Amino acid sequence: MAPGIRLDGLRGGVLAWDGQLEDDARLVVAIARTAAAHGASILTYTRAVSVDGGEVLLRDTHGKLGDFTLRPKVVINAAGVWSADIEPDIKVRPARGTHLVFDGERFGHPTTALTLPIMAPSLSRKTMKG
Image (cartoon, rainbow, N blue to C red; front, top):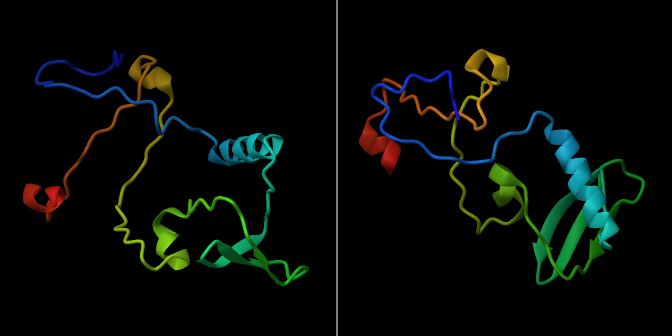
């Protein structure tokens, strides 16, 4: 699956399909179009100011609509590390990472991604685990 990797010293691996995107913006557009095809309303240039008791206060960031309230059946908080900006009860500890994207040809056209944890000199294994 990863022909460019030496096997000596290798103790195992994990096969995963996430993180294989080259254009995350196209994924967001595809998801929005799919949701719209199933009846969702897609709001762009809109910020969630608060979510409380089934009501969502939204702000049009272009200023044309001002603030307005919706009462959706479902609310999905997909704000990632900014989730607590919308709901303070959410506790998120951001992780730091670096992503390098290489041409698959350089690694023999692997059919899976390679994820290599590299520990910073100042961090111990104990710190990394907990």
